Amino acid sequence: MANRPLAYVLSERKATLGKLAGKTVIQAVPTGRKRIDHRSFCEEVGRATTFTGAEVEAVLRLAAEIAKRHVENGDSVDFGDIGTLTPTFSSSLVEKGKEEFNPTKHISKPAVRLQPSRRYFTLSGVSYERTEKTARAKNKQNTPEDNHP
Image (cartoon, rainbow, N blue to C red; front, side, top):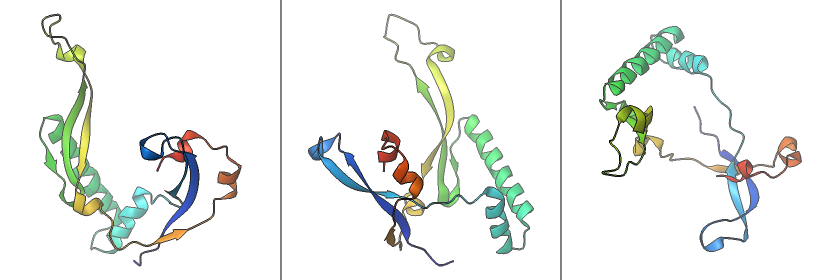
């Protein structure tokens, strides 16, 4: 599959941090992205192997379920080129001597954390193509959501 340029538009906003705080700045924002649905992805992988798309989907689903079970048991899972899956959670601060730390009360939001592989998630060999904002984007009011990179 040949690489296409990464499309972007230029967005104008007011900087809020750093040496340019308060000044109007121009920033490139990625655009024109489409989402490849899971089934299409599995079919594509299947065409490149001896597996069917359904078999690829089943293997990916099983791998994710097994990895999640290991992480729920407190283990970290090396998920190959993607990275490492580890357990994480939020914890409230409890002043020492004032209150007993209670894990069911003070620990919340247990989740799987992906520590992405730098090698895999660093894109190389990409080019860039400036595009014009779509009519929808031009008509839309400039909201804070539009201004993040």
